[in-house]
Amino acid sequence: MLGFRPYDELPAYVSGFSVGLIPYTTSPYTRNCSPLKVFEYLAAGKAVVASGVPELGGMEPDVTLADGPEELVAALEAALSADSPEAVARRQELAKKNTWDARTERLLDLVGGRLAG
Image (cartoon, rainbow, N blue to C red):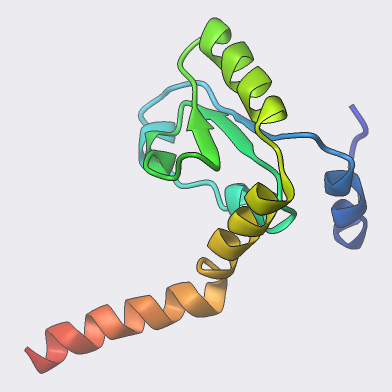
């Protein structure tokens, strides 16, 4: 464990990752959370393997959900073997669609539509 690192140094660490890992234990909390770390990994072009966070379902092939140690290992191995420049570009594009600005715009559109309707 490296301990605390300044925020501005984190991109350098993530650039050395092969896969972004979100290893949550399934709980009522994690069944209802959406870890934003996923978009930071995707912005760096990394495939993501996650456990315990069903909210991330539907983001395949860039985010793979795994249930249990065997599935986690298999998902990590698959993510490592499926990397390509095209996959990196696709992940980065997905991250761009989920910036704070993009999410805020979608939320305002939804609210505006409800108020107008």
